[in-house]
Each structure stands twice: as structure tokens, then as C-alpha cells.
Length: 144
Image 1 (cartoon, rainbow, N blue to C red):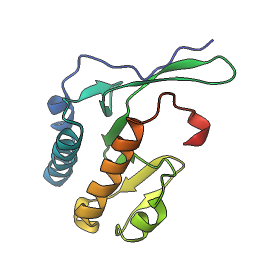
Image 2 (tube, rainbow, N blue to C red; image 1 turned 90 degrees about the horizontal axis):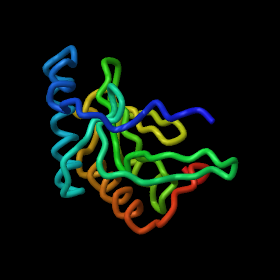
Image 3 (spheres, one colour; image 1 turned 90 degrees about the vertical axis):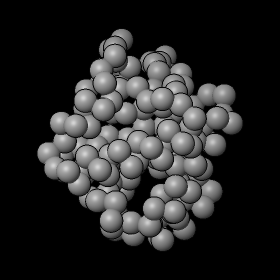
Image 4 (cartoon, rainbow, N blue to C red; image 1 turned 180 degrees about the vertical axis):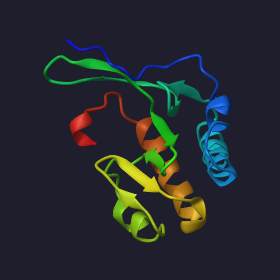
């Protein structure tokens, strides 16, 4: 069975953010970092080379494949910031409708710059996902 490539590392979150290509991207990353630290009450960990995660949860597929992943995470990339927060929680679509300029993937929320969105709505999304992650015993990735 294939081993997960995305694992917690000892790399510095701040050093990673400081490699971002513009001051705005760095500022946005530090803003989301502080928001997640405040919501979780935890310090972040680098997962692989580019994901900043908080806490961890163990998952297992019906196939037997299993591993660990962060309960809450984001990746401030060169193109856009990716927040792994779309879990189909109750009220998710209504919050996304009022968020501002963004794109979505299956579990990803893509934001070009924080100035394009309503930060209070982002805070609600992150808080809801964190609260939900801490009430579930097991995570079924098919539910994400």
C-alpha cells in the first residue's frame, strides 16, 4: 500500500511563509495563520513542503488505506491561497455565497487575496470546520 506523502515535518512555518513571492501574499498568509491559531488554540505544523496544519486526525478508507491528516489546514501558494475547509457542513453554501471572490474545489477554498473576501465570513467558516472536526471520532474522506 502506498505511503502518504503529506506528513508532519519539523520545517518552520514562518520560514515557509517568508519564501512567498510578494509582501501581500506573506501578509495574507500570516493573517490566516493567526486566525487559525486563535480558533484552534494551537501552534501550527508544516505538513509536507507547503501545507500548514493544526492538530491531526486519523482516517481509514474501506479499502484499508489509512493515514493521518491535519484537522484544519491551508497552503499559501504562489498563485492563490488554498484552505482545506469545505466539508459540506450545514450552512456552508450560504457562507460561501456571502464570502466574496473565491473559487472552490471538492474540499478546497481558493482565494487570490484576502482583500477580495469578507474576513468575518471566513472566520465563521474556519470556526465551523474546526468545531465539526472536534466532534467527529472518525473521518470518512468520502464525506468531504
